[in-house]
Amino acid sequence: MLVNDVMNREVISCAPEESIVDLVKKFMRFNYHTLPVVDKECVVIGIVDYEDIMKVFTPHNPALEKLLKSTHLYNINEADIQEIDLPDDIGTTVSVADIMETDFVTIDSEEELSALRSKMKQYNVERLPVIEEGRLVGFITLFDIIVAVLKMKGLL
Amino acid sequence: MNTILSIGILLLGALVAERLVARIKVPGVTAYILLGVLLGPSIFNLLDTELIGVSDIMSNIVLGFIAFHIGSNFSGENFRKIGSSVLVVSLLETSITFLFVMGGILLITQEPIYMASVYGAIAAATAPTATMMIVMQYNARGPFTDLLLGIVSMDDAWGVILFSITLFFAMNAHADTGTGGGVSTLFFHIGFELLTAALVGTLAAYIVRWFGKYVQRRGDALTFILGLLFFSTGTALFFGASALLTNIVFGTVVINLEPTSYRFFDHLKKVDWPLYIMFYVLVGANFKVELMVSLGVVALVYVLFRIIGKVCGSYIGGYISVKDKSVRRYMGLALMPQAGVALGLALLAKSRFPELGEMLFVTITATTILYELIGPFATRYALIKAGDIET
Image: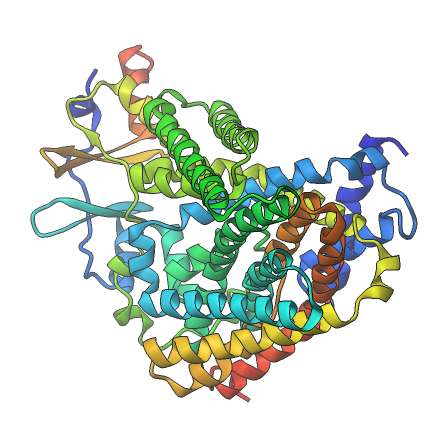
């Protein structure tokens, strides 16, 4: 069975310039927690999930935060999330591009499901954008694989 | 006391000690060192001697991990994101501090040049955790804070690189005082060591690239990366090259060659914490309290010249890259805390120079505790003066 046969073709994506408020609304509306970020040519340029939104609760540049966390014995208690001062304009000034992850893994639609599962384990991810010639054509999750296998075995 | 029981006491004691010192807003590393001093032979003698005897192996392994993580930050994308001012100021303040401390120790205390240069290199490192604790405690924010956080996360890297290169010179110069080898022999040795570090580190990175895709299960991924780190550290030591530089090359090449290899760094982070703790407690246990009385001019010169170096270096760095008065005036003070990496390097130097290294180790450990206690006040003062803490 190929990725093509199982993937979700009605993929919801977002643009890098979308505001964080629009992103949260999209997560709420579609009940998703991971979305691919695409440019105008539909090429995947990043992945954003709800955990990335946590970056706005840190008062510093996310790149700095990442750098500090890579230093050894870095052990700072997170501040009380209710007490953190957020600037009034944060909903409009922070865009998807500011918080998305640019190190991500994709899968080609012609790959076998077994290859997809291997990739998921290898990179410790459960949701991958599906591409054809570099462009986004779908999205596939571990749950999609589970459903496909159960159907194949006649259990669903 | 048997070794295994000693490890148990050490790890559990470290957790308690860290929480106790957190009440006075001091980072964990100070707690681990003080616990080590208390448990060590100088005071309560509760640690097995065999365990203290493996400090040298521990320091090579743990510093290998630290160096590998340092290398992982050297990606083109990271440098682009943190900005050139962080690089300019951190490079200048570390190299000027190195020169000041080396010059001061050399001129005032009459230590040989190779020991003075090791003091200089260690002085470059700062304390990311202590700095971030101050930033969070006082809710500091602004361009000065961002620049400060960028610098403290980079200058441990520069410190480790400076130390590795300095150690080549120091060890060769130290050996040559007995054998009378010439300058050409010295440069041959250094060239050989640098080349070995580059080759072994690059080879380890290519092994990740070639075989990483066959390693899928989590346990295997951890085994793979641990095996490679031991392989690169051990091979470097076998050829007499710097394990630190080798692993920095390993981390740097792997992250630029294969950006998705971050998964190996993540696996390593899940297990390295207790090793760091053990390492710092052992650093404390190696500390000979009786040598404290002989701490005098060297410690004073080290503390003063490190501060002068940081202040002057930041002034010049700030003048060149930021054009902001507050950076020129106060960044040096904000960089005063000194912590873990300096201690690790001091322990390594101690094992390389048994006669003079003992005094260096005691000096760095004692001044680290001092810097950890007074440094945060200097950082806070600098952040207030720069306008990043509202008063």
